[in-house]
Image (cartoon, rainbow, N blue to C red; front, side):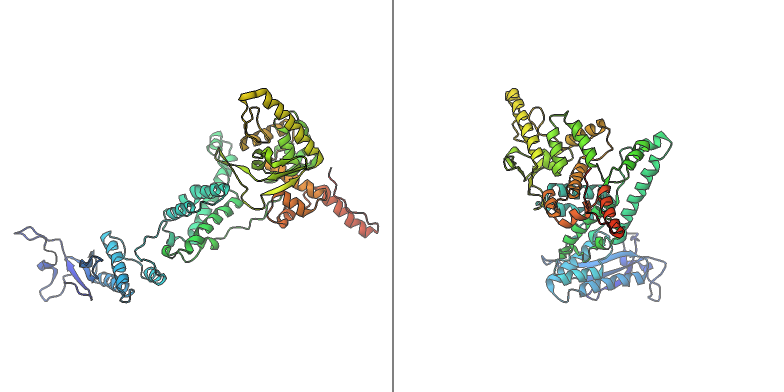
Amino acid sequence: MASREGSTFKRCGCRDETTGRAMGVRCPQLKRRGGGWNPAHGAWAFQYELPRTSDGKRRQARRVGLSTHAEALEGLDQVKALMGLASGEEDVEVQVADLIQTALNQRRPLPDTEEVRKRIGTGVDVRAQVPTVESWLTEWLDGKPDLALGTRASYAGHIRKYLVPHLGRLRLDKLQARHVEAMFAEIEETNIHILECRESDDAKVKASVRGQRVISLSTKHRIRATLRSALSDAVRRPDLSVSVNIASHVRLPSCPRIKPMVWTPDRVRQWKADGTVPGEVMVWTPEQTRTFLTHARKYRWLYAMFHLIAVKGLRRGEAVGLPWSNTRLTDGQIDIRVQVVQLAWETVTTTPKSAAGQRTITLDNDTVKVLRAWKRFQNEERLKAGQAWEDTGLAFTRRDGSGWHPAQASDWFLRISRAAGLPPITLHGLRHGAASMALAAGSDVKVVSGELGHATVHFTQDTYQTVFPDVAKAAAEATASLLRGSPVPVKAPVS
């Protein structure tokens, strides 16, 4: 019988010739004539008397089939070391014994001594199972019901597309920085593959990556931020045995804020020649924006919305979700209190995700006139439609009164800009242009920042200051004039 000191022994699979029963430790071939163990027969094993189960049953820790005596001694010593961690506390002894028994029954390695020591030190049940990365990310996201819908969709996309496929099977407490770095290395390899296929002369090769996107550096930073947020919460959970947020130690190249680039004449010529788009975020000059709005007048159901975005810089979701009840045309103001968020193709009306996003915007006289004219036209069409009109209360609607889907607004924006022969920008680029024009016209940066719904003035100033080349040119000439001894006032021309 095993004692609390435990024992090592040999056993084999031989059977009694008379009874057919396994002889186990009683096989005479296990020992030599002198009493020593026969190295050519049987396998080594160890056993140790564990504390009784919580319901009082006796049990033993036993592992058989080991190759050497040293291996058996090592296993026995590890069991003793694990039990010693409980320091005589009965409830902890039972927990550690349960952990050992589970590992032996499932033929898994014995628990790591330092890991168990850490769990005992934090006061958690050592038997608690540490989840996989996939399980934890799912639990983490489900446990955040108050996330803004757009943020939730972004987190879910990062988890589904990148974190789970690359890291999901790892146990959470075994996740290391090298695993995350390997994920980003694989993403970059895929990027290179996509770019190489796009440049191929083989049509089939090109077609093989059609629709596949290159993952930008900014997206990689956001993926890391999602993992870092999830691990930050895991570190606060002692039962998860995560002591370090390894995502904070994963290095990525710095990701400078992307500033808008203007479609200058030289850039437009290059674009017309070979289709080159020089920047990730492009904006039109004031003259190009006027050209767009002139063409947009032909589209009565869209013009007022695009005019408002071009002048005041509303976000797409804020414009398509704006109700008339949040407009005060007599005061020349609109209140941004709701927005339409696109999740896949479905849309949800919600509040802006930040306090800065909820704001009041002051309108210029021309924009008030545009909105009043549009409202009169919309009312006339509503009366003509009668019961067929869908009464949404929205400021900008389609012909039947229903609201615009955000993607439809973007599609129509692209159609009109192409028809006008303008270089490409996104609908969000129209917002960037509004910000740039406001600053170029000399508007106070605090006012511009507030009306755009930015969290800080610094962001507005850093992103949009001196976007237009003629503004920078005017400043350069003013500086040079000081050297000439004929100073001229700095102007912020808006062509």
